Structures are given as structure tokens and as C-alpha cells.
Figure (tube, chains in turn blue, cyan):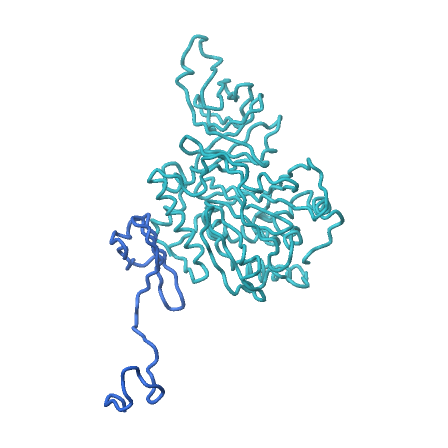
Length: 78
Length: 418
């Protein structure tokens, strides 16, 4: 069933997206919930995805490359 | 997945509903012209939740008025054509094309009672073998002269069916390109297997590598890249359009078609398959070849099983088994369903225009000769493939299909996929 809608307001104009003539359409990509939104008030359109876990790129391994701005002799590199 | 409130907003078409207001801005086909004959000059019509009667009077003019006589509620489907309109069979009240009561034969001759009687009446026009009605506010826009409705040098057939399902799930099928490789590809292969038929190759099962959707001035163009294709192929480079709000245009060099979905009410749709067979280069076709109409079946003779051995029967099986109105509060859309979501958004966007007093997309106010739409020539890298599948899709039920294939090819047609 339709879950409680976590997308309440338009990120562009701030009006309520609960307006029935706005569109909040949930779909899925693998394990991710994606809300396709269209604002009745300002016509902004976009996709909003809740973030469950913050991830970034893989950690650079020691000695694999020099980090910009850090000399090889930097005490931060071991 | 949608909220119930939004599902209702998108699916309810009756008078006073927001979607009903939007759809009333468009001319809707309500009959095939050949349905009205001198001996059967009326047709009962249900469109956008309204019960009406289409008729041709004895002067040859078309009219569309409320179904029930305002006197005692008898259906005017059984009316008597008159030079000025249609008479009720019960007591002879006469109504003209504007819904005015012109005569009440049994009331006193000097009575003005008839001037107080008025019923619903809507403009109708005939084009390309179809009769179109406009149920919206005046002034009525121009009747769009889409290319296939006015195209010269083709042979037309018109299939029809009343589908017991809401119009939106039928339209959403047209924004879902990948259903083709399964429903009309793998599922069809399974049907063949059950029938003991072994197709040498069934190109409709080709896998989609990529699908895309672009808004254009008349709706949404959908595109596909199949295994072995590139973006240079017609399926992607040209694509084919969903014409807003309720029409699919699909075809190739050999056969150009519209599929038109007219909401009768919230749970029934009048579906038309409008097909134009294109003659091979150098082949002359008879100039006055008739437009033949035929019914496309949903059910087998037992009334229980769907007819699934043709492409459009397979589609109807899916539309109807989704329920009278698909429950979008329980659906699970994936990445390949984004065309469906785009179409929902477009409906809401155009609905908002109507609220603001503007004309929505595809409402034309200026006279025009012809509106051309994108047309693929070689779909699935198979040239005029649709002519080859004409025996396994809606045109299968055209009683004159074999004659048409012979006429457009100028020889006996043997090009089949099977």
C-alpha cells in the first residue's frame, strides 16, 4: 500500500506537495526508493531519493598516488 | 505507486471531474461512419460518463443528443429519423441537433411547452471514416486533421472493441515499450508452443537495451534500442508517438496505425484500431476501396478465456486483468516504467492548464490541412514488418485482409513471420 509520503514540500517553491494535483510517484531502483515529483504550484520536476547510508568513493590506498597538496614527506602520510 | 486520491484524479472521467474536464477539450471518435445506415440511423453512445444517441437525420446531417427523451425517459436509440432531427418512438416528440424540442404532436397546437424542453446536445463531425464528438465548452476547437485521417493512396480498416477497463491503464501500456519483448515476444512464443506452431524466428522477442521518452509538441515520443541496433535505427532515431491525450501512433513503411482510446466511463473504454495499408512502390490501389470495420474479440467463445493468439488480444488480456480500474496504490514501478510516470505528470500538467483557462496540448484553434506525425519506416530492422504480422494483430479480424494484402503488394502476399 501507499506508504506515508515523506516528500511533503516542493524543494523549489516550498509549497505543499500534498496538493492532490501535484504528482508524487514512488518507484524503485534496486533497493532505493525514488520519488518522482512534479509541483502543481511552480511546475518544478525532479526525483528525490531518501539516503539510508552515506557512502563515498573507495579510500585511496597507501602509496597508490600522492594526494594533491600533501608532500610525500607529510606527517599525515604513513 | 500513487496515493488513492491521485489514482482517482487520473482515472475518473465523468462530468465535473478534473480529468473529465481535461478530456472534454478534445474531439473523441464515438462511432465508425459506416455504422449509421438508412435502416440503422442511430447508435447509442456512452462517452465520458454521459449516455447519448448519435443519429443521422433524413437530411443526412449528424446529431448527438441525450439518450433519454425528457418526456418519459425512453431511449432515443429507437428514434425515428426526421428531416429536422430525431423523433421519440413513444409519443413523437421531435428533437433537433441542438437538443431543442421542435414538436410535441399530442400537445395542443398552440402550446409553448416545447420551448421549455431542452436536452444535452454536442457537435459532431465526420473525418477519415470516423465520427467525432466534442463534449467540452464552446467554442469547439478545430477537429485535428491527423495525417492518417486524411492520407491519400492507402487502404483503411477500422477495428473496434469495448474494453471493460479504465482508459488510463490502456494508455499506460503505450508508455511501456519493454512489454513488447515479453507479452508479444516470449509470451507469444509460449502461445505458439501450446498450439504446436514453431516460428522460424520471432523478432518481437528481441531484448531492449535502452528506452527513452521525449516530450514533443503533440505528446511523448518513445524510443527503443534493441539488441543489435544502434541509435541510428528508426526505433530510436525517429521513435513513435503517444499523441496527447489518448492516441498511440505506431507503424512502419507498410502499415501506419492509430490506436485510439475513448473513455466511455471509469471502467469501460471504446478502443479503435485505425490502420492504413500503404501500397508497395508503383502499385496502384482502387481509389474508392471501402473502409471495412470489424470487431476485435477479447474473449474466446466460452466467454471465459481471453483470446491471446494475437497481439492486441494479448494487450487486452493485460488491461482487463489489471481490474476495472488498476490499483496504483499497490503497484511497484521500476526504472523501465519511467515513461508511465512521465505520462501521468503530463496529464496533471495539462489539467492545470485547463484550470487556468488555457488550452491544453493538442487543442487546435486555427484551420489546417494536415498534421504530420513522426513515422518509423523500418522497425526492428525488418522493413515493413507490420504487414508481415498483419495476420497476428488487430487486422487479423478484418474480413478482407487477404484481399488488402494482395492489393497493396500487387501480388499474392506470402511475407509472413510464421
